[in-house]
Length: 139
Image (cartoon, rainbow, N blue to C red):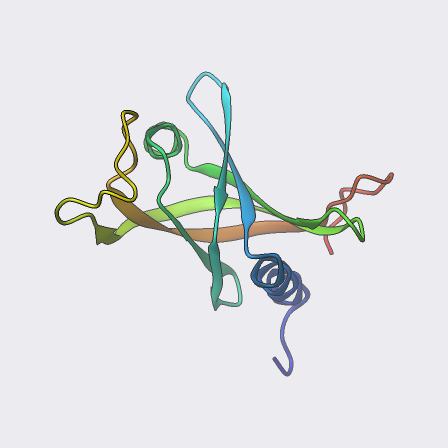
């Protein structure tokens, strides 16, 4: 992206890494600050400061975001110890797909998410993420 702002370069890096890995981690917390971690298979850049994350998120993620719109998304390659953390606010939650009918291959005795959701996230900060010592300055 020619002439892109530094933050958008960081978002592009996070999206590319998540796509390469096939997943990203999504951290939310409820109103009281109790954390919850989920994984998402799809992440895409919408604009210079906005991205979308899609998954069949469990109810805890959705409930947390109804109370607290703050979110952290991490794409991290544990083998190379290279990663990016995106911190932002969920602007809206869209329903991308809804289960329609019986699916024996995913039915079980435990309830599973019935709606695939797409989180539209306004990015506030992009920082490096690694196991090794690192700074929390923007990428």
